[in-house]
Image 1 (cartoon, rainbow, N blue to C red):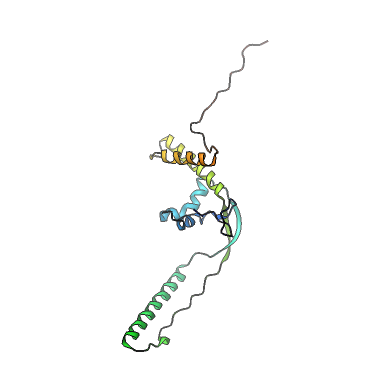
Image 2 (image 1 turned 90 degrees about the vertical axis):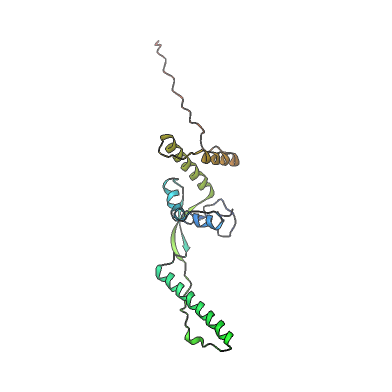
Length: 184
């Protein structure tokens, strides 16, 4: 899985992925992500996971506006019409006058400077930990109904894989010993 790639397309532990682009990158790597979750994953990680991020300005191509989408669809439809007319003319042995068909020219979108919230894979690990702790508390309070055993096994796998304990299995509390009541 190559999600956290730097500018040179190499796997990196540096902060190199915008938190709002993470869902798209996961989708490109083959993860099946619900469209609603894909749209909101960055905000969820920032809110519930308290993911640590660095603000950075970078060039990105802005999302397509409704007008641009319509123009692109019209251009695609015109191109299909021309292809069909060519096939039909070739079948009849005629020549087609392409001046009758004008395809609107759509200029390529230019990148603009945007504020990015860059994260690393390490930030993602700690975010997963915080999200798990949040779910665990909700489950213990009876607010969350689904079982967290799957999440707990995933966190145990992360602990074993990275040889670092992310959370305590069962919290243990120690009471302070009472001061001695013997006075001198």
